[in-house]
Length: 495
Image (cartoon, rainbow, N blue to C red):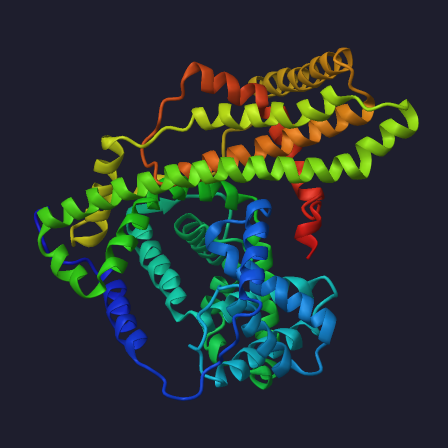
């Protein structure tokens, strides 16, 4: 680069991390929350089981645990004593090893209690269905209270948003500027941190309602109308049909910043001086890229193992609850081939999908380094890249494709059902086979999608991979529908 001056976008990020490093070193000498180790191993083992079969993203496990525990404690204890509820919450998180033991001051319980109180108060201003959603958003603020470093996500996200606006122009599509701001903020946050709906909602809430984190129930009551309008708009923004399209567009443009975040977090104090030496900076970027590529490969392998464990556990539940009783009662015998193949065939498909996953090459690393340099170093933007998310009007070709897809959808299911019937499957067995295959393929493709999070270049799909994608598309559509309708299918997930 011609200039080694740091761009305005990167400066607040560096300042935040340097300040955070100092704050985390400060020690609070007051009394700490400490629990015994009696239940720790059991709680930790339970959470590992949940992680294996509950398809949540790794970075969301703690937030999901907070949401789940708060909902359970509200059901068990009610809303009468939020201090007791909050203390139990912190202890359970310590037992499950989501947070440190003998680390938090006792006053943290009151802080969390106040957070829960303001969200519960807000829920009384909405219809019944809002309460669970607001508890999900509350879990984000509770997690942030327990781990202040999470604020770095927001700082980083806003810096990337500023860079994106400087380099890209979202043209047309009929959205007002406020909605475009919201959509872009959500898409960038999702792309960088794999955030879910509660995380996205909390991020927008902090942006739209100034001073939200310092508010208590009484403050919420005074600014009720403003907050209610903001929350209604936030839920609407999260469900905007443009979000999925914008997310796909943004993801490739901002994936490189995951590498920059890793680099800064390794040594916040030295990051700025490293940026002053472009050659050393480039070398560090390349090293982190290689490490992250290896890490993604490990995550893919773990995802495959989780899928297989999921198949076996859920198969046992299905067999005991449905298949075996049905066959013994109606058919008077057990068909071992359908029982076994319902497990083995989905496992085979998981491995086939895994074989289509490729490690990013050197050209990908070069593109990541170029994007990071563009963000870090001051330079003049000569021309913005204009983009629109509204596709061309659907004409005859789209109708032909829809018709062909419909025929393929019916043909694939009919052919497989015919083969299964000849193999000795009954109607229940065929239905369970389709459910298993669809859900497992969905999970396998989620693993594949997660493996592509650092891909900033277009990877040419092989003929076999392309054929595999098209043949499994009907099952993926069914899997998406089933996952949405039966997200609470496993009894572990209900606990």
